[in-house]
Structure formats: C-alpha cells, structure tokens
Length: 414
Image (cartoon, rainbow, N blue to C red):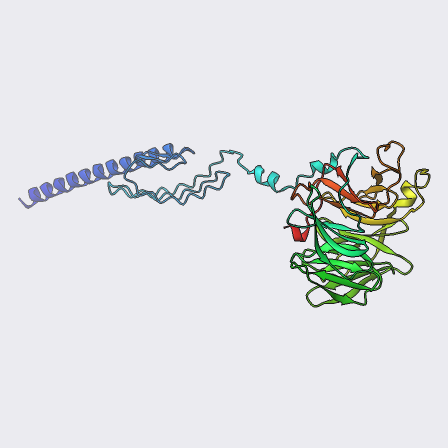
C-alpha cells in the first residue's frame, strides 16, 4: 500500500514537471518571436512593430507616449531616444539610436554665400575717362560738402565770407556770415554742425545749426583739408606737413603725423575708416594706418600722381598741384589736380585719369582751362546722386560725373 502511494505521487510529480517544462518553452518561444519582430522592423526606417510606425518623422501609431529627443540638425542626424511605453503594459525598452545617414545635403551653403561681401561691382567699373556735365548755377568755393537735408554747403569768399546752402536745382540761401578771411576745408560733424578751416588765423570755426559760429580751436598751423571719422573726431591737414587730430567736444587737438618739408592738402578715410589718405601739393599721395586710439601709424607714399600722369601732358596750364580728394566704396581714391583733372588711384597704386575738364583737346565744350580745388561724391539726397562725383570750379559752377560706384559712408549722413 505504501509502495503504491509512492508510485502514484512520483507519477504526479513527473506530470507536473512536464507541464512546467512545456510552459517555460512556450514562454521562451514567444519572447524570441517578439524580439525578432522588433529588431527586424527597426531597420533605418524605424517602423517599430509594436504599432510604432517610427519613420524618422516619429508618427507613433500606438498610444505610445513617445518621448523623442530628436535633435534634427539640418543634416538629419536624428538621435531618437524612443522610450515607448505601450498602452498594453508591454514595456518596450526600444532604445532606437537611429543614425539616419540620409545625406539630405542640407548643409546650408546659402548662409556662407550670404555672408560674403559682393565685390563684383568693384572689378567692373565703367571705363575711364568719364564725361562731365556742367551745372552753371553754383558759387565758387575752395571746398564743399553735402548735408543731410539734400543741400550742397559751400563757404564763399567773394567780398564777404558766406556759408551758402543750395539745392540741386540751384536755389541758394545764405545760412551764415562768418569772419573768415581764408576759408578752405569744409566738413560736417555727426551733430550737423559745420566745421571750416581758417588758414589766415590758424584756427577752426564751428557753425552751429542755428547759424551762429565760434572759433573753437586756435593755434593749428596753416590748416587746410578736413576729414571726420565715425566717432566725430576731425583730422586736418596742414601746409606745414602735419596732420592734426581735433576733439570737437574738448576743443583740443594733437599732432598725429609730421613730414618735414611737405605741404599737405586733401584728406579722406578709407571705406572702413582704418586708413587715412592725404595728398601733398607737389604730387605725392600718402597713407597711414589709423590706430585704435586715433593716432596714426607710419607715413607711406603710395604714388606721385604728377610723375605718373602729367610728365608729357601738353594741355596743362602749369599749376601741377594736387588739392582735394575723395574715395569710393571700393577704395579707389579720386585726387584733384588743379588744372582740371581728377585722377583715380586704385588700392594697388595704379593711376588713371578719371575726368578731364578743359585740359584735354577732346573736351571742346568747356570754355578754356578749369581750375578746380575739390571733389566729393553725392549724398543720395535731394537729387545729389550717390554714384556721381561733383567737382567745384574756382570759376563758379559744378561738374557732375556718373562713376558707376558710390562714395564711402559719411558719419553725418547716417
């Protein structure tokens, strides 16, 4: 009896073990199938068969709360950290690191192109020399400047020293009458105040916006041409071979460059205001780097314009002197030779006649020789075109010349 019971218990135990083994096998097969399906479906297209249709755009179909850390950086390198928690309590730890190498080639070359400065226009300027048109109805002056209201500003010295403002159509008004026996350089500060050199009294005059004036800096030896930097400081040339830097707020000045034996006249900044150019009446064109504190680096002679252009020119009156200068947005200088020529000096030092007024046999429309002291680009306001040069004559009147390039930015015209 006892043996029979033991046999029965033993058989029951075997049967139990058999059922347990079958259950374990079925569970293992089911788990392997799920794993195979999940891994098969996850091939670069991320189509997770837990109803996760994760095709790089992560449109998860199941009620999957898909926390995508998609860092889609234009080159489509999506690092999907899909921790899909399915609604059927199937905790899929699919950590899909999808290194999508679909090289869409969206490497934003547009930005690189946009950031490059377009200098194509500078290499395709119109051929020289250019033809000039005479505007008869403007007074004679040593220098001139364009204001922000569309006027040309000139300081005349015909019996009285008058500050004249004229529109492009020639309508003129007397803005101020000043005690200046020898007006030369004329510029406008960012404040709108006009500055004029008085070489006779070795001083600078400031004309306020209401027409009043004062002598605000004295003791500058033979001041001539003027240029204003982007911070409102004034640089003045001297007939004694000096460059002065003037603080119009403190009413003070310092000598920032000196070349013994030279006589400086025209002056202008480069388009980026990091270089100062100035000319010597006897032909040399100079430059100096502008330091961070406003002082100047070493003086360097770029070229002697008279030697390069006028050595064998039979049409010159014999003045053979440089005067004012200006510069275009491409860095080309335009230098006045007083016999009626504007000479272009490129950044590389090449020299060419840009305009010839009466000093060339082809310019028969002009009455005789012209004596000219100053040149500037227009302001783009009131009819004065930004890509036209304007040249003043000691005989009265202006010349206008289309150049196909604008002048540099001026601080008072911003």
